[in-house]
Length: 428
Image 1 (cartoon, rainbow, N blue to C red):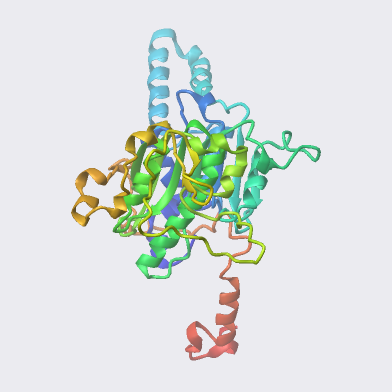
Image 2: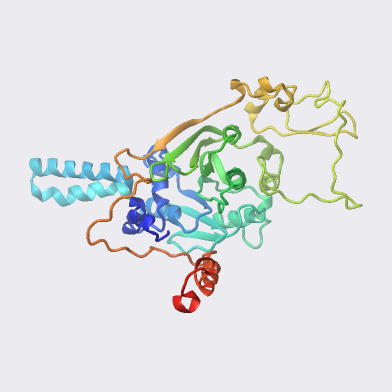
């Protein structure tokens, strides 16, 4: 959380410190939950195991801790519950007398009980201050070595020292929700930033494919670009419903949005592999395990001739796996789920004419939903500071910010680019 003049006039920046949030991004998850009911408030037992990727500084993990572990409510849901309690208490006071007020309040608070058997794991490459009831891992979600660490953190009893490697087993208790608020350090080159963000999303999706239960949910940040509908279509192959959400606390001038995927459909290719071994070869990209080299150390791969058909005649493609006409030719097919067979065509879409390749029926665009109450604060507006305003300190400063060395060098040089009049001695 910055402390510039613009940040001080940002309403969500001030509210985050007043409500004890580590960052203003906590309001984004709260507003997404208001729209999509991520935490299943009517059925609390459906969401008890959650994985938070790219969690630092921990604002989204704070929301998970206070909603799932402590049983609190925020946003419009909290306001509705407060009004309901006041109305019920007023009605009881008129009908039964003031002696029943304490009992009414106790009954109203009964709906905000902490959930049982909650397990939350937060992962980030940067160190993060600990939170109550949350397991924190310092790891890189783009590296395959993070997979066994995540599985051990989710089920420490299942992967003890005597058990096999976590990468060779299926998770005994899948998670209900995977969220990711990660984004790269933007360079200003929009095409490059969008590409790096998409690769980060694929890495988060790769972990989600291995730990989500059937019907689970996945939420991740995305930068909306020119061909972003390709990512939407890929997500649609493994989720029943995909939506794009723009919380009101997210600045309209920003390209960021959040993909909300509901109804997870486990890919069928995992059925033919040994549990988490399938995660070593990601479905949609990301970091894959290195392939074994040949005896002569050649890493090249033989490519079929142009005259060789992509799908030989007489080959049955009803099952996923490897099919071939002889021992020298191998074609690999990977079906995502049982419905994938209906969309298979003899000729790939990339080989079709341009007019047919970019036809309307070949592009799928999800619904774009604006989350948050219209009467709430505008994230792009600069509000005047109230009289006698006292700026609060950040709730949790970064434990090891990557920009600390840059600030030290700037101070040694006497300011930005060494152009200050007084220099380092004057600034000290």
